[in-house]
Image 1 (cartoon, rainbow, N blue to C red):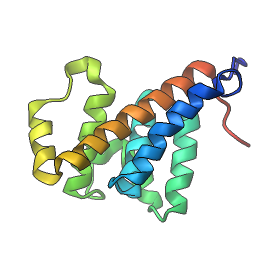
Image 2 (tube, rainbow, N blue to C red):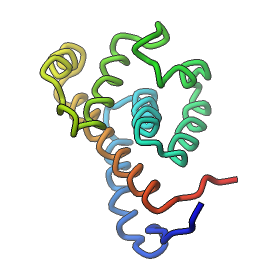
Image 3 (spheres, rainbow, N blue to C red):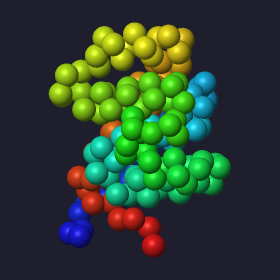
Image 4 (cartoon, helix red, strand yellow):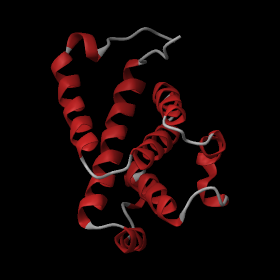
Length: 146
């Protein structure tokens, strides 16, 4: 793959700002399991190999089941995910592909059946954050570590 400018090296303050969002999410109520599912699924949708690799490995270290990671790209078509997780994954799909039709009223309503305003807000911020990281990694060809 073509070598490109690495923003982390030439604009470290940009990465510092991004890590500020990560710090906010780490201190919040969003479960680590939910955040990893969001990170992996958004990265799959966006085609970010670096992030898929990183977050799948992190999820495994946290005890996530391999099979669930393998099935994540077809989450709606299996019984491996709870209804709560399916709502989170639907939110991830719709917000990641916001250009298609936005966040539907149906998905929003379903999310509000499962989550309070704080948890919902942190889900949205998690989706936005990983989408930003995906765009950085894809546009600059961040290499996958050996």
